[in-house]
Length: 290
Length: 267
Ligand code: SF4
Ligand code: SF4
Ligand code: SF4
Image 1 (cartoon, rainbow over the protein chains, first blue to last red):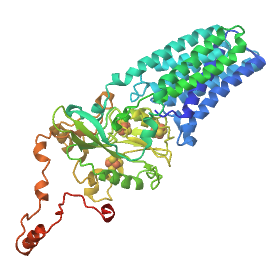
Image 2: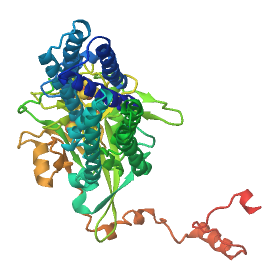
Image 3: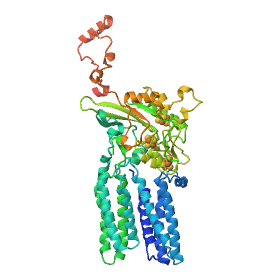
Image 4: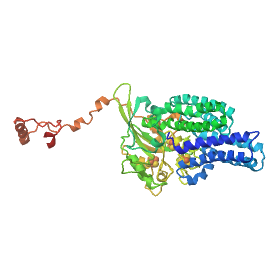
């Protein structure tokens, strides 16, 4: 799949922002006043910035409001609702903390649940795609949520929790790569089933339908960059998991925390790039590619 | 509404005969011609006369080489347009309700004024039947020529999809695949019509008829040769005399199989 920068940035930053909102929401002893204000501004810049950047890849962004209508069937529509609900509820909760020194606990818990629901809906947009076997497995939502929780813990300065969650997210990420590599074969979709010509013999693409490129190839058959996938996986894993954990284990974790956070965010961006670039859409089989 | 109907009254669709398709792309052009002028926005091209032309098409023809265990390989031309699936994943992912499947005849359509161009439906389709129009920013797909098949302003013979009407080989058939007595359903039953990617669970309405086995391929390869042989090997009369005289002159005879050399080549 084509790794569109706007979608990569969206899912990375909104995941971080929503993770931070989750930890703010369930905090039994949340910050108040200016400290709370700073935390909420960071969370909203990340979450809202991410959501806004996701509209950049729309062909008709001016009609985006219509995406709220089909929540009964569409995960994208559910994501729209969940994100707005999470942001509104957490804004009320933040209002209490910042201006009235009041901890409306129930609102916080509700907002935290909605924040994670939003991450879940985002991940389900990809998970539901049977056409992209690498995404089409239950590990995908687990990966998105684990990374969001770990990143949020890191952002909110919870050192011990962050270390454990980073380790957990790292394990899920490794599992996702290992299992993901087998998914296309497991799906059973091949050039033979795609063309129905399997019973006759081995199928080879002789001539594509067009001499140039087209939307399908640009959007769904992205093969550039897969060559360096293994190296990039190492880099992503190092930046996202290993380096932040090491930095947090050093003394003065709050000073090195900033570095850990930057490294983690860069690592998640790299991992998300691979999430798209490595994903094979079955339509590629019609072109003899994957 | 992007929830799928429980069932549809009819299942209109195409039956595509891989045995007869000659890969001429006439249906591609007929489809583009009709649909760029009718339903929805025109089908745009990008850089059509430049170095990197691309464009929106609703129907495309692949060609495959199939190598059996023994015997010569076979070339199969493979038209592909929307299969108007019963369990269309492209419809349920749509957040706006722009994509829908009609209850009355099962045609899958995009209401372009509702489409936000998110592209999710194209991701969800395993067949590559949806293409985003890069000028209009909305999703385009085969409409089964909904504006022809019910169009009372057209002569009756033209009330079929443009691709079916134009196909010189008769490789595309249109009809109700929900009715077991229809011509298309009988064709599917007789010829063992098949689904593409059945494991994807989309339950396509369109069916493909497999190529017939080529059991006389070795006898058929020179099927045209007798027609291409020279009509008269031995010229008689004046031409015969000329032929024999020229043959006797020194110098190489100009055999047709030898490549002709131009003046520069001789120098
Ligand atoms: S072929 Fe693709 S676009 Fe057409 S109905 Fe099936 S899934 Fe949808
Ligand atoms: S591109 Fe248009 S038709 Fe397709 S899912 Fe998005 S809004 Fe619906
Ligand atoms: S039915 Fe109409 S829109 Fe569909 S492929 Fe044929 S000509 Fe194109």
